[in-house]
Image 1 (cartoon, rainbow, N blue to C red):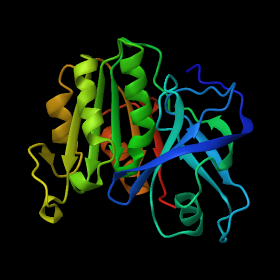
Image 2 (cartoon, rainbow, N blue to C red):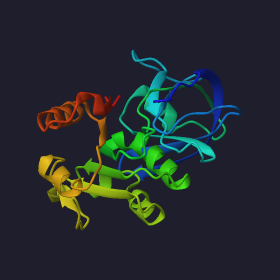
Image 3 (cartoon, rainbow, N blue to C red):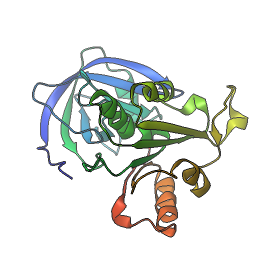
Length: 246
């Protein structure tokens, strides 16, 4: 797949943070000189001199949500009440963290004749946000279908941005679906329910020899993998990454 990169450890400075969905924040770091990665890869972030810690330690793995062409390194995460995330949330401006990487092979395939079908659940959108922004900025010819599943629109990080990318890339289609609209205070005119075979079938009728990418909670990843295999997809054409929600 041509995703080999040399992992390096270096310091990165916090340049900003923002809420991108309910209880979900994006953190922006100044990209260290010489740091390079491929869209879809991840890094380890280690807090320096953390004010508190727990049994999980001061290092976590994050998919890089920014595209390689963007100025900052961005990661996004659900803000659960853990020592690591409390410290991360309260880092003063210009604080430095140690990053190591990049890691991972969840990167877009080279053969542009084959469609890419991306399936994200919740915060599993982060590597795919990197991929679809990269594809738009580089004008890649790949046909890309992004299925993005959340409980409610309030939970869907980057939703409006991902929709707006359709105007920049005619080869890209976003299919967002919500599974718990009864708990939402917003209007929704898109798909509802879970990602399932009938939904995939409606949008993938003209997709050429797709390669499937899945990122999200372990149950979703295993369920979608089983669904695809049952419909005859070769396991070699399925790539996945589990988000455990630490």
